[in-house]
Image 1 (tube, rainbow over the protein chains, first blue to last red):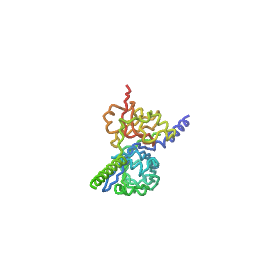
Image 2: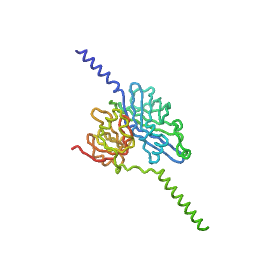
Image 3: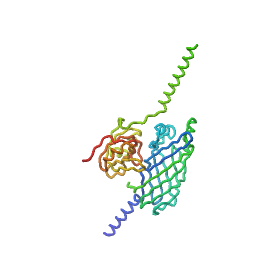
Image 4: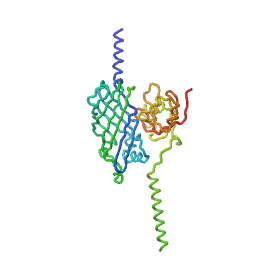
Length: 181
Length: 144
């Protein structure tokens, strides 16, 4: 009888482990900046989704392109309709792995994340330097990286070329909670 | 001859004004006033999540103005944005995420988790949750 109870306890423990090892951020912030002499463009998305498997260090990020908020409605319209074509490519995703990640380390650690970023129908390999804060099991990931507009097949009309930078700076911050599937 | 010169000047001025008007209409996008906008759909948060969970991705098209009623799961100000999360159903981790307009902060103070609320916003899409932006309180129903 005791063996049977032990078996069930082990079964429940191992059955739950994959979910317990995962953490989720449902309201991640991703902002991008384009600085030129003509115009500064800033946009923010506060509903980016990310899941990390603490056991393997695998990380996935997904965001809706039409959820970026701009200062001006016209900028948002150009971004969605002309450049990103969010009706055709509604999401951008990142799938990667945190290199040498040890979830048991408390406080701050800086790690590289290697993975594939897909946007506007184009996938590119990226390496992103990331700051990881672990405050008693609450993880926060933040960092900055740059993306070249031409890498993602985004066509800027010659008339507006001076308004949009060739390199876009992207900031991110994800605050994770235990994942309850 | 003098009259013809004046006519041409008036014609040019007219063309310039028409061009300005056309350019303005083409490039100026008036922001949507959600408070006054008529919703295209009225939905319950649990019904919406149930549709997406059945992988019915076409349950609701992006950019539609929707009035949505549900039970408040959480109110937070993560990233300095006031966000209301509505419960997606019993034993359901998916929820409806409503990013509130800044002018809603005062009215939202009357609400707390487990209250029922009716919000109006622009549907953006579904990730693990349904996402709405520019949300405003449409009509409050307090559990008392």
